[in-house]
Image (cartoon, rainbow, N blue to C red):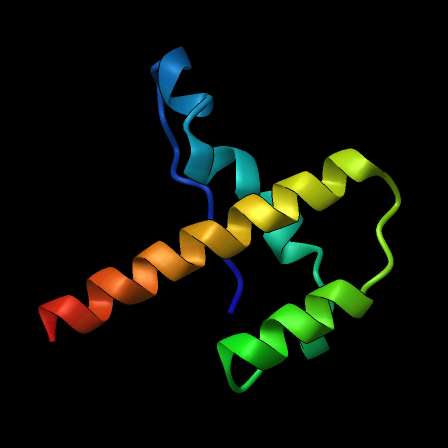
Length: 77
């Protein structure tokens, strides 16, 4: 469940949310990433110790992004 950054030649593309969040998502431990449900993911994420408040905010943004992606995925199916 690792994410990969898209190679881009435009500087503006480097600042997109998806490119900024990849490193933080990839640094999460497997126990958080492979949670069987959203509720367990939230609990594991809350138990994960963060180095700074800024990192916590970014992880919350990842959660929101995943939530939106799941909603889109289930809507398409």
